[in-house]
Image 1 (cartoon, one colour):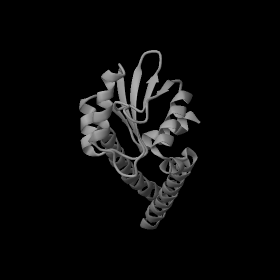
Image 2: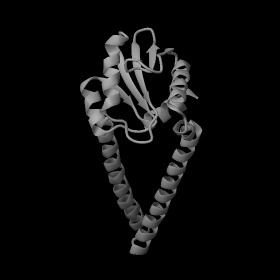
Image 3: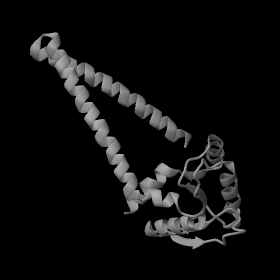
Image 4: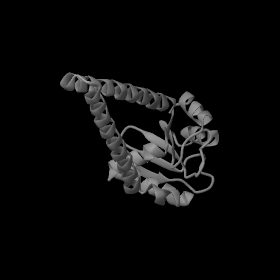
Length: 187
């Protein structure tokens, strides 16, 4: 997850650099064709307008993707409904899904199996950030269920401490953004 934030930061820096470079290029094009400042400003203004329209389109696209994913309905589910939803989602993606008991589950809500792996999944439908406890619980489930992998899936995000603990214990974290992508890929 820390790597994911670094990627986002790098992408943002690259986008800013690309924007500045494109703005300068637009100014140069304006100067090349008109050889006066009016042409430079018209060219740069046109580019800015185009950039703003693209940004608006991109944000609107993201909004509709969220609606299509049904994340609002997920946010309103109970914990058990969220577990059932994840079970159906992972079954659709080709996993054999086993539900554990609702209490005394030894830290895993779902057990996923494919040809090679057994995955212990801790499902957390939260309105706030998911902390270290969820990661600790799923680590405990690894041996109990003879799992080869451990995942924590949430409709929210993870605290930095949870991300750090997960990284040092090879626990795969699936946050809100990842969950939306999985849902959209499964439709």
